Every structure is written in C-alpha cells, then in structure tokens.
Image (cartoon, rainbow, N blue to C red; front, top):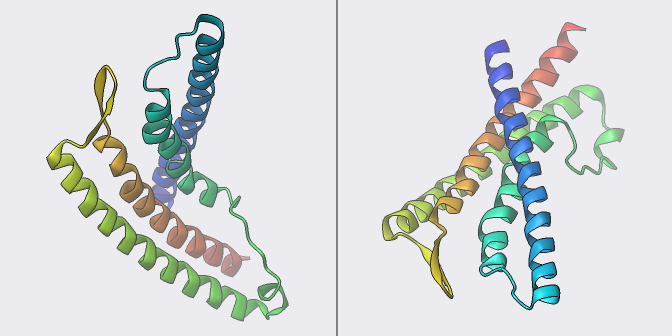
Amino acid sequence: MKALDRILAGVSTAGGFIAGIALMSMLMLIMADVLMKYLMDQPITGTLEIVSYYFMPIAVYLALPYVERTGEHISVPLVTERLPEPVRRALAIVVAWLSAGYLLIVAWACGQKALALTQSGDSVNVIFFDLVIWPARWLVPIAFVLLAIQLVHGTFSKHNEEQTR
C-alpha cells in the first residue's frame, strides 16, 4: 500500500506540475499572440489550435488526479455531514467504487476513440502547416484511469487511517 501511495503521489504531483506548466505556457503564448497582433500586425499562426488542442486538455486532465489527491475537488456535504460516521464511511466507499467504475468506462470509450484517431493520424490545418492533434486525445483515458485509481486508493487510505486511530 505504501509503494502504491508513493507511485500515485509521484504521478499525480508530476501531472499537476505539467498542468501548471501548460497553464503558464498558454498564458505566455496568448500574450505573445496579442502583442504580435496589435504591435506588429502579425499574430502567431496556430495559437488558437495549440491552446485548445494541447494546453487546455493538459491543464485540465493532468491536474485531475492531483486535485483529487490533495482533496481540492468541490464537495457539498449538506446531507452527508449529518449522517453517522459509519454510514458516511460506507457511503464514501460506495461512491468511490461507482465513480471509479464510471471513470473507467469513460476512459475505455475515450481510449477507443483515441486509438482510432491515432491510427488515422488526426490533425487540423493551421494555414501554413498541419497540427497533429491525436496525441492530446490520449490525455482523457490516461487521466481518467489515474483518477479512478486515486479515488479508490484515497478512499481506502482514509478508511484505514480512521480505523487505526
């Protein structure tokens, strides 16, 4: 369990770090595009496509396991906070398993789509060149599998910590 915890911590932290780099890169590219457009009348070709097909998916999907690990997802415990502790724990386990199951189904479906797009060499035309976009399609299945593992592992880690107290 400790080895899995270390691996998940490393992978989710790396994903969060890469997501942060993608956000900063997106910011710098958009700022450079705006400056080039208004100061030199020469916008950077492909900014919209690079931001929407690479930076945004990286920033969103790679951050998901990190956000789950650090407990920063939005939660509204209006009903669950009034339940007895054993019921709350059992409900957390059921919700984690159902959520993980759903995430794995979505990951599988998105993986099938990513595979098809990889085989077809999915790209978009950006005036002067074709931007290959199929690699970014793999972010959803990878991130959802990691998130499902993190959900179940995190729930059982909390449950085990509470039992040892």
